[in-house]
Image (cartoon, rainbow, N blue to C red; front, side, top):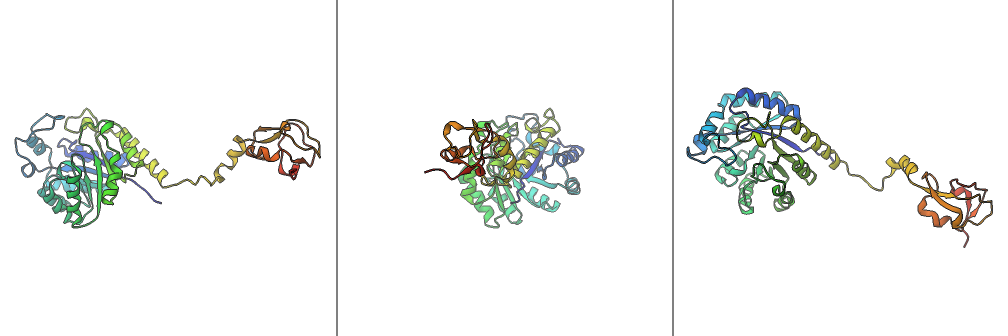
Length: 336
């Protein structure tokens, strides 16, 4: 079975409007081993009122101004997409308006990631679904009913859907990660599932993969000390690299089921560490073997210790020296 979790390095707006930073973050995502690097395409005039509030975890500047300042032109987005492609990583960006979807179509992305705040934006979901491209649907702040509606909207046009458990809390504490939701999502919609992480460590992502998540998204930054809305809740390169390595090892584990009845790999170890039936005294040929004559010692290359009672009552075919392995060939049939 081949299994490779799709790992997304979420850059978001960590670049803080610097085209050079955005390019370098793509390079970092590649170096860390991610499969995709994801940005956010914000067109403030199309998605937010100027007096819309900022989230509690970032009050640095008004939302409209922040999106305007940190956004890129269409040509810049195309250059970033080309830079990612030429570097061997998939370029992704989450849209936050129908106009952003049109821009991403112009850029030529191959799949869409729906951010948690857009799950109830069914008109935009329909626009995305009409492209007939794969969709990763986040679930961070939505109820089951809202998610049902979103899934139904997308599935009216295609079934290339993966739903991601997410908790819209920055940072997300362990008790709110919601790993229990993965199984219910999978059975509820008969769809692959993933996990979008806002926790500070790697444990939630690793656990999600072990529980069946086939896509994982985690924020990436140069440093948590950077300015912006996401940097302080993101993974620095060393942490992200460790996450990728851990996920790849879990992939290998899940792709390689172990047969507990196949003991070929343990043949040598069993001889070294297990025990066999041994003699505790000299046993003359023709003697009926009693339990007092027997003991259990390493190595495990003789009659297994579990068969001690089978040896009791047998007759020695040859002289057996004290403190030595008793072998099947040393015995005649057990007496009745």
